[in-house]
Image (cartoon, rainbow, N blue to C red):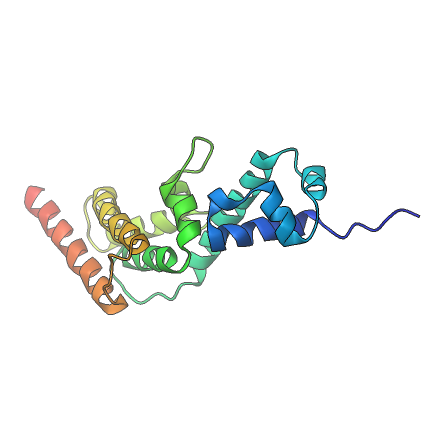
Length: 188
């Protein structure tokens, strides 16, 4: 009778993903995953060719996690790009290590920031269309300006240098959007 497998691919992936959330991606090694999963490294390399394959699976799980996080994030503002920014900053605050993996420490085989943000639901495209419907002549330009601002604020949360409340942040996004829009109208 064959021995029952107790360590599954899902258990290994879940363990590595949990470790990434808690300790950071750089700390996910075969030995540490095995110790946390309560097994040797053999089950890991039975289901994954190498650590790169496991790391790719963890990365894809992190992308899906962010997209789920964003889709469930409460919408509080009506200003284009504000809700996307609020979710992004909250994600950086609550999921520091996943944020670093997805949006700070990118690699050559990883998705672009835009691909992750836009996701399968077209989140960025939705916001750009919202800006267009609101009367913005060049919403792509406004998105880029807002995104530089939003990404900077989110990165500041990683170092503990961002201490605005959600209300203050939303007001800042609204003010910034309107200022960028006004500047665009003057130039146009």
